[in-house]
Amino acid sequence: MTQVRNQEELQEWLVGRGRWVAAGLAARIGLRVLPKLELMVSLAPTKNSTLLLLPVFRALAVPWIASSRPSDGPEFSAAGDIAAASSRKAAGDGRTIARALARTKSKDYGETGRARAAVADAAAAAAKAAVRTAIVSAIRTVHRALATGVDVWPEINRDIALLEDGAQIEQVMNRPLWGEDMPEELKVNWQSLKQSLLALDEDWWVWTQWYEDRLEGGAKPNGRSLIYHLEKERALIPKDKWKKGAAHFNAVIAEIEEKYRGKPPVDEVAEQRQASVQTEYHEDGLLHRRPPPAPALKGEAQEGRLRVAWQSHLHMFEDLAELQPGRNYPAVGNFLKRYQAALGVSFDELNVIALGTQGLRLQNLADSANDFFLEDAVAEIKALKDSHHLFIRQFQDWLDYLDDAGIDIPQEAIEDSKDVLEETEHEPELFAEDLRAPVHDLLEEVDTNILPDPEDRIQLSDTDKLNLVRVVGNIFSGLFEPLFPLARKAQKTGVALSGPLLDFGKKVVKFVKSPVVISLLTGGAVAVAQELGWIKPIADLILSVIK
Image (cartoon, rainbow, N blue to C red; front, top):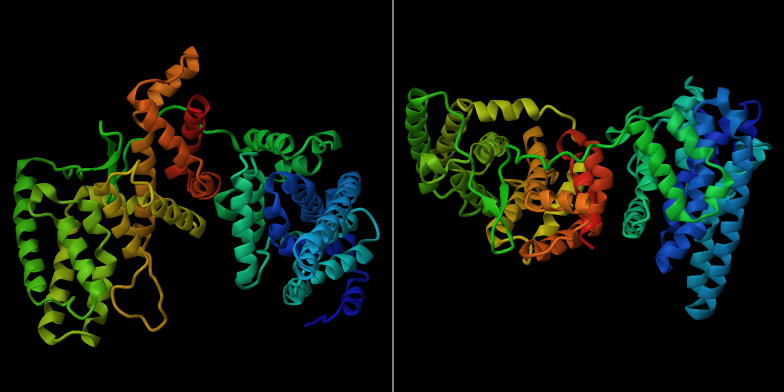
């Protein structure tokens, strides 16, 4: 298998491979180094995102979509010419900023800025590869990408290996950008850049989603279908719309997205879903934890049987708790506290979903118990595990929850959900202690192994993932439920909100505008639209009437 080690060898390999192979590889190289612009954009996000980043996104979108369907590639030549010129200008602007940095900060800072500005040069060359002189432009893309400090050769060779194995360039274009994990520094750059963009309230989600879909690859990256005609329209938007700045141009793309993907109707706030935590608004102006709903039962006979089963299971738990297996293992002690809280001090306080989601942890504890505990504790742990599975599966609520847990929940949605839950811990003026405490416990349990693991792996079951996402949905349901009817009325009548709920609404708006919530609404919520897709249209309505 070919291994190219320098630009000369790559140029030799590209000869005879066709224009779209060169253009496609160039686009993927440019996309890999794009996060390096984070430094330049962070200096003046509103100005530099339009000045530097928008032309780069534009310049890379053209060769990416053109190479994804080479039969239509020539249709993008004019757009590639315009995009290349725009990105070259951005590179010049970046170098001007770098010279200013050298004067006002330090020579080293200026050199770093100059290296980061090379991203725009790489993007311009990639766009040019979709027009003419594809090989020369691809080599220039590599040259400028290397100037950013990113070693792009391993990924170039992975792409070459795919092509030599028989893959077509359109197949390579839909592969993840990185064969292994994205380098940590670039991850940090991208997350910082993404947060800066989403905080601008200029519809930058149309690009952050697009970029993360390219990172992920596949026909349905991050749960969003790859729609060729949408991407074609994105690349062919007329020049006059590009010149009006990021806010205007991104709004145009948002309209295209809505045209092809549709827009969830602003119908109603979703009801609280089955999860370990549900919420409700109280007159003290805070969101509180709602008591767990009573289990769905089929009559007095079943209720009587389950009450007896609950009592028996409680005794089993108490037998284990008496042995204090958490004395030397704090995570085990915390697990037992959460398990006891979910089980309740009476059948009427039982939280079926919270108890059910502890099943995998109890299973893991039983599987490893022989390595950590004495015989009597091992026996009690395994007995509780067996009793748990028999007990919990008698509840229809849990069986329904297991059916729902079969949905695909991407890692993006998990991370976004955790970030939002962490944010609630820092908002005591919006979230009551009786809600923040169980949210803290939930985050602790999904980030902590119950027993030491030599590889420090955190295993999340499908039920854990669904619970995380649903708790987030329940928080927004609780926040929006008292506000939505008033917001819809205000939208129709033009009469502004007033009264006690206005102060609550302002706190909700502040929370919704936080970077972590914006990231969720434009990322993770889209990936699991069946659970969280309702949130953004309701949030948009509330934001439109509460300033």
